[in-house]
Length: 282
Image 1 (spheres, rainbow, N blue to C red):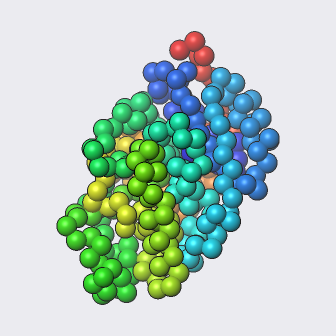
Image 2 (tube, rainbow, N blue to C red):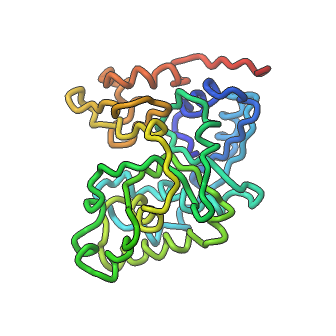
């Protein structure tokens, strides 16, 4: 999980509030190497006194030379690419993780998501959205080049959001998937084959080969622009996780007194506004 720059911690708070065994949770935080790790550690420990966690520093230099300019400057932040390096950042004794962005809240037990079964040859699991226009995630240069477009031959690729994933780190390491993703990023530097930051390399490597997860575990796209007329609604069906992916963030809208309706779900988990309370005996 990537901690936010402000001590709001809604993702952590919501996970602890909704899991049956919060004492069994262990959090792995990935932070920019430029962040003050001592201050971050003290802030987390003070906010969540019983939390078991580690902090891993991600150096921008690990990926800076591979990043291509995308259609949204916010997507070019090196920390957005840290998920590609989890297998290297985390100790090898950590064999499986649930990766979460920080702009989300859970309203269900994360243990259900963590228990998602992976097939014998599957590296990760995530909700898939097969109704999305998959071709739009790549340029005409990509689709017009048979040696590139054949990447998806014999696969049924669907879009998935990389903000919520269950990852088998052992299989990732064994298959050298960090290198596979980097190879696509290197190609992108030479010929523009996609527009959107860190997502397309994941699609190129994994789309059509992941273990499916029910859509309820990533009701994403709630970060519509910061105007009420452009607020996003939930997708039809049950909800276990709400994800404010996109330009607009709920804490910005709430602080500006311009909230979208669903930002009311975020507000109770915003620890700048809501006192934290958790029975440590659970």
